[in-house]
Length: 265
Figure (cartoon, rainbow, N blue to C red):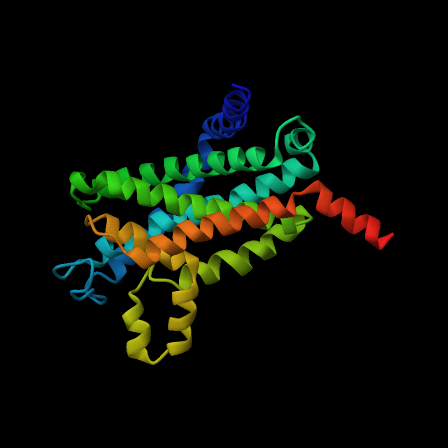
């Protein structure tokens, strides 16, 4: 009961704070919508996606973009969560929560659940908007797709949680955002299939994309939209989420910091 009350307090605070700021939802959706409208219109007759898994026929570019933009929503929210964690740790409620009689791992898990919930909420809103633009998928595949979005959002929220350990000042967040978000987004199949990189001879970009965790978030969602499972991507997403969370847990360990300071002294 103590853990449930703590979970309700931490996760509920994140959701309520988000719902009290409707402009935050609007700003989170403007970016992917702009990409969706402009790029799908501009490359509609230029960029074709040939028959490749999970597609069984040629698809329009707008259809191909949707999984990547869903991942984009989760990626930016994960970085926004890391900014919130840095602010709360330095000035806000996180400073008080870290002194609460609650295991640190549970506290960070609840913060992770809050970030994942916000990402999932924004992804669902964007998915509904894409339906209004004529994007179709089978509702029979929605449970698998929902699970893929949850796992992908968890991975990116865990990444943001880990980064909040190493971001010491709010002023450093902009540089970290540029260093993490844009390479992860552009070196991925969010906007173009990976075989295009291979075809153009950019093999080093292809290797980077294959090692990019965001690539596997996008591919997990893309395959799930058609009721298929990409085993490699699922493995990377699940294992990556666990690894990032454990690194964040290790970074927020007060004993590790105390021992380090004592050794330095």
